[in-house]
Image 1 (cartoon, rainbow, N blue to C red):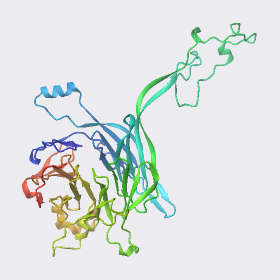
Image 2 (image 1 turned 90 degrees about the vertical axis):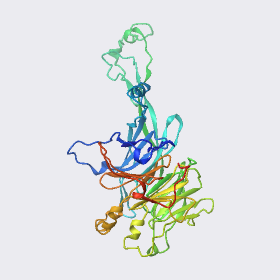
Image 3 (image 1 turned 180 degrees about the vertical axis):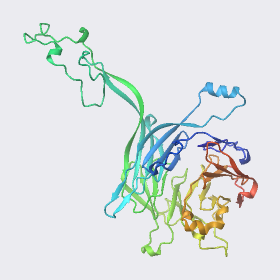
Image 4 (image 1 turned 180 degrees about the horizontal axis):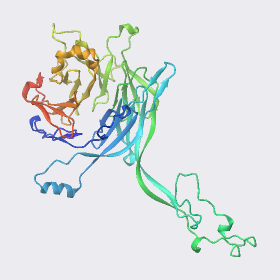
Length: 465
């Protein structure tokens, strides 16, 4: 994990220009020893921060979800850092919280299809009572709602048993077993009598009767599956997005988008369906879908043809007819065999205030103003050096690789992944670009200012977020 001053999700309005961003190594999760072979099930397939940045969730190909929470330095630590000079930004550090098995391998007997346990995507939901957190995760077919909460472990102790019979001193509260009852010889009962206060009356150890008590021990984090949403998608699920109303979410596969209520697992509403009557007429598929961050009736979805559609659920129950279409037409005479492949959008994200949409195709990042459909306000070249190698990339199937994208909290910077363990970050105002390698000793491999890394159709003005 790397941290950059002014470039994180909670960056303020005084974010530094791209040239002054200070990228530093923060920490690494799941570090392996030299020579250790990486298991396929341990490879991370999904990463998601919550809106506050206080919690981080990761999913892997083995169907596991691992949660982390941010550590805040103590007051004394911050004072010591100030004493060494300046007022540094608080260090970004997360600690392991808990993990659980979200999905297991399944088999669809009707289609003779094996369903992998790999987590395709996950999203944080609202915060519940008693600091409980909710999140949804999905593999190719099944979506699950998980509740993560603190659980106080308790046990029963202080039984009326002596040292000889005190074999199970403490038992968990939910244990079905109780303390072993001592035999008659251990209780001092004789055959001569059993009257109260007489000979043969059982006497507790030490002469005093003790009441068993419940004692609290450790606090652990537990995860419980609250809802299971299944049998609604015929194709592989590629996107989840939680609505700003905190009650509904959408799930998207290649041809359909469904609307769900978090409290209802047996009913969903199909709001987009692009499946043609004859599958031979299929020309595009849905690649990503995202709710508007503030207006619960709007959502955007992208296609393999490079277009983004903004739909309004108030207009129709079935939103196949979009209200806005964002599509940049390729200049005449520049089309090639690879044009449609590299134009396919793999991810879309709204800015925090919903004014801009960021999209990622194979070669570029594009920033769209929701009020201007004709062309993006800025285009950032991520893989321009690969344009001359598209034929080789096609033969190796690398041209079909998918990359995700993100915006900083203030909308001043955008970032996306690349090859070679690298990611690229861009300044939306100046077009400045940084290329960094994700290592313990990050080196700024290349720094560009001005228009070297981006082409802008218009300045991205204030009010970003």
